[in-house]
Image 1 (tube, helix red, strand yellow):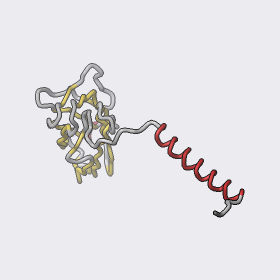
Image 2 (cartoon, one colour; image 1 turned 180 degrees about the vertical axis):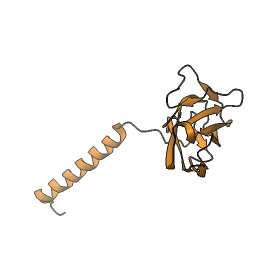
Image 3 (cartoon, one colour; image 1 turned 135 degrees about the horizontal axis):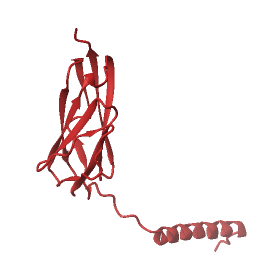
Image 4 (cartoon, one colour; image 1 turned 135 degrees about the vertical axis):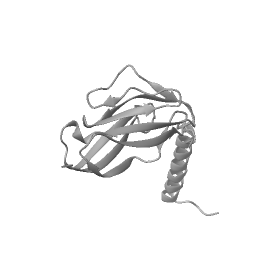
Length: 166
């Protein structure tokens, strides 16, 4: 029978110790649950998030509608909206009610609405280029506030090229 040298014995004992510690650490660490791809809350899924009005005369209002739905598995609570300029406003059209008009300086805080899973709604966006004499290229933003866990502030935007009517 062969003798194991003290150096080889130290290497074997060290390797066994390292393997033992690794196994113990694996079984003692808390295990994370498997990730689920099913949302338990509401989720905003919009038909579009940006659009171009194109060339628009500096006359009263142009409108654009954006459809969106709750693609989550729970209720989507909508708590309001905000626009980046006084020339832009939005109404949230739910299946059973419409919100008040939201603007840059008019944001009712006492309104909320809800979409059940799978329900659809619409943003009615109003752009009024004569609100303060806009001319040329413009870009505006609308923020929709909700309990969507991934996008609690869903952003929509548009552009336009406003020309003067003589």
